[in-house]
Image 1 (spheres, one colour):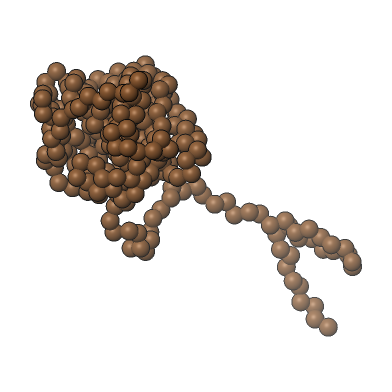
Image 2 (image 1 turned 30 degrees about the horizontal axis):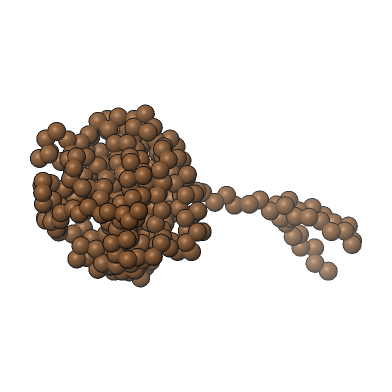
Length: 270
């Protein structure tokens, strides 16, 4: 008969015949870490962007469209939104399929709605297009304030049954002022842009921002240049009777003139 002694495990104790003993095993604490994408995962990711309009508007990016008063920047972005919702080409850029569109009109929401109706009527499009307008005052300068926008996105997706791919904020100055911020202060702008980045990541959608140029149009958009660090593309609008859209900054693509355009008046039938 062996007299070998077997050491007890941590938390274990001697048991009488027929007695069950619960053994305590301490849990190994897993440290919290930021998500990592390893090289082997990068190698199987798509090599090209996921486009809304090929060569111009991509998912998981953001753009800024700015110009002086009367440059038709809001009209142009409204048209882009309608075309994205309808899945039809826009200004020579090929559509890669319809997506849900939310237009956050912090200025002139009623005018934005009429513009959308006009574009739909001129194109003969159905009234079931997945496009909606938010006319409420949106606050994005508080921690986690992006969640209200994300809830709005989910509500729209529930209505349409397709994901939102494009969200438009018009205008940036009204957005920052809604929360009591100052467009000229980098800190105030930084808070807004951080929340916009969270919105963009939520569905890997495209965020387009409408803005203004300063008094000197040659110096670009008004206010602090804080947004330049995270904006993927900046488009400046200029001209009087004939407007021109020009990419003046782009992280991943060519810069230069995009297209020229004029405006037309749409008369609604009473």
